[in-house]
Length: 155
Image 1 (cartoon, helix red, strand yellow):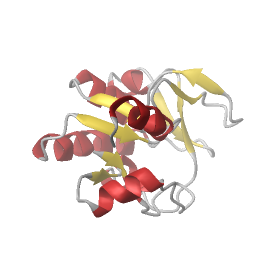
Image 2 (tube, rainbow, N blue to C red):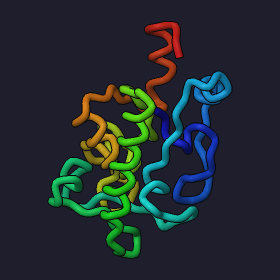
Image 3 (tube, rainbow, N blue to C red):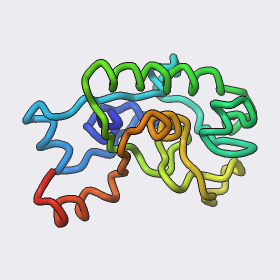
């Protein structure tokens, strides 16, 4: 399973994508299940940037934190719904690993933006990354792809 924006789909908040040659090749080989939790949750493209306030993705799932847009609109329910739908897609497709978009409030792994909309990072995972980890998925970001190729010969 791979974040759709990494697969060349223009679904990032600003209507762009972040494709990579490795993911492009895997897409052509039919080895990728693309998912965009924001779209699966019902958010449009483009959309205002959003960040997690009060914790990280696991806190959002447990109701202790919220996802807000830059103008303060609460979009938590969209992120939770999208993460649940993306998890279902992954499980139905037999996926147990994912390559997700780094630093995203949905997909970030290890570091996400801190909720101040100042591009500062904090430790934590996005909503989907937290949910996938809870269900035993092995998760990477696009920043791990070269290391993975060097270590294993694939992707």
